[in-house]
Length: 417
Image (cartoon, rainbow, N blue to C red):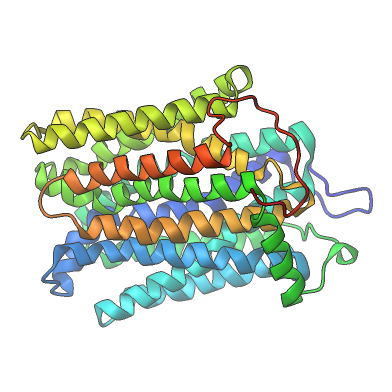
């Protein structure tokens, strides 16, 4: 059984805690990836003349999801986990209902932004609940098992979306999200105890919150890897935004597109598993720095092949699979390195990292997606450029010590490079 502390909060069994945390995180992945097969239908329904505009259905969600994380951390620390989470899930359902009845494309985009804002609570509070209830190695085990379950969401979501479209129209996809939000609301309401004791709550005051964010983000390692992560995640988000246009339409996969997408997501899942097995022996920096260099070489070589007219589906898919496989070893280790100096500011550091990687990535990913003009060149060339910029940031952050030792001399809180 998991338990907060000796003062006695109600308990929740570890298997149920894992399932609950995984489901909360999966709601966000489902909200993004289930939409992909429906984008052409949405574009047709709202008579969009520029097919790239339908990518905004994904991009605005990510933008709202990123910014709101900065608020949910302090809110959950001040008012408790359960009430804030239930309020957010209620907001998610309301925003989803607005998506269903949206009379214009602009209204749909506003509703999707609000969906992202509400869903941000699931990421922040799920991790806070785990920290409240379990500690040490058991906490790592709970998070690892939850992530393993969570990875099924991006693999299965496009197929689920396509299955819904076989039996109905695109509004039914939002109906499925509404049902998922309602199911989670009922589960949280009936089964999750409040995990933050009243005496442990902090006062919600703007200036101390801003000061903590400023101190956390001014640390050289945290700031450097946060910026590099934002660039690398932009490569992932640009792929998600353009994947339906490139694979379903450019390469004529049609209804088979969800299977191709699932293959890429499955490669990411395998990469995370391999990384977890290797990182203790090889080290975060060696693995991530090496993977980043290979990512640049593969993406740059891919761009050269497209420029030379070598652009068949299997060439595209094989090289993209390899690049995204390497992404799994970059993203996980960069995330860990961001949190390495966090100490007692782990909460605000996590929220700042989530906000940066979502908002910056959404803006850059949207820019790359908008450049799509019938070939995958903007996507793979953009990946190569983003990789180079991330490598330069890491080189500066590590003061020229790529592949260096895992331990560096600690800096004072707030010490910048």
